[in-house]
Every structure is written in C-alpha cells, then in structure tokens.
Image 1: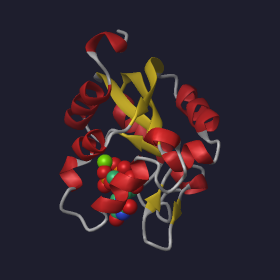
Image 2: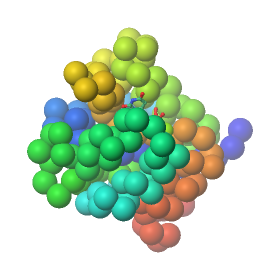
Image 3: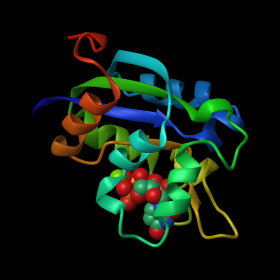
Length: 151
Ligand code: UDP
Ligand code: MG
C-alpha cells in the first residue's frame, strides 16, 4: 500500500464550535503521522483555487464564504491546515471524517456526529480532507510551501 500525504482543514464551524482538539484526537488515533500544521488566512483567491473543481455548482459562492469564516465570525478567515502522512492516509482520514452530507455520514464519524445542514442548504461538516491522490498532492502544495511539510 502507498505511503500518502493528505490535507486536512479544520473548517470555520469546527473552529467556532471548539472541535479542533477532538478532530486532531481522532486523526491521531488513526496512527497516521502529523507532518505539517499551520494557521492560514484564507484569501478569496486561495478559497477559489482550493475549491476550483466545484466552481460551477450552485453552492459555490456560499462555500467560499463558509471556508473564509464569514458565517462563523472567524477573524481574517483563518483555518488550521494539517498534513497527515502514512499508509493509505487519504482513505483512512476520509473514513473517520464521514460522508460529505452530514445526514448521510455514518454515526460516530466526525461529520456524522457534529456536521449539520443549514437552512440555506450549506453542508457545515467540520473538516476538509483530500479525496484522492491527485487532489491531495495539489492541495498540500497549495496550502504549504515545500519546506513546511516534514518527511
Ligand atoms: N457542499 C455543500 N453542498 C453540497 C456539496 C458540497 O455545501 O451539495 C460543501 C461541503 O461543505 C463540502 C464542500 O462543499 O465539504 C466540498 O464538496 P466536496 O464534494 O468536495 O465534498 P468533500 O470532499 O468535502 O467531502
Ligand atoms: Mg472534496
């Protein structure tokens, strides 16, 4: 099995509801290794680049506002960005995160336990996690400079 790196963002709902520690605890429980961590101010350009595959979706404008903290009063639109490394890391993190739609996420997953759908139909689901190797490589390089992620 491949050694992978995967990008995790604690989304503004996760930060506002003080789920950062719980999320890191769940990530650490996988046995994967934490190899990158920093607080990032999410510019409009960074948000749009991160989610560019979704640019034509009806929920895209609100998704950009959400990740920049506009719905949660997060100063400067800041998020905690993490990189975890290990065997099958991408899939293992997606498994503990749970499905994108909090109503479909399995009980006990982070999203199944703490996610919600707003009255505006926004999925607030606590964390971002890379979905496949190509996305993970692109996202780690987008959020971290080369020397910021350890081997
Ligand atoms: N999203 C949403 N409504 C949808 C689909 C996605 O609000 O119908 C939001 C949700 O916050 C999700 C993000 O857009 O996490 C990115 O969507 P993606 O399909 O990449 O899901 P993810 O990879 O985060 O599970
Ligand atoms: Mg995705």
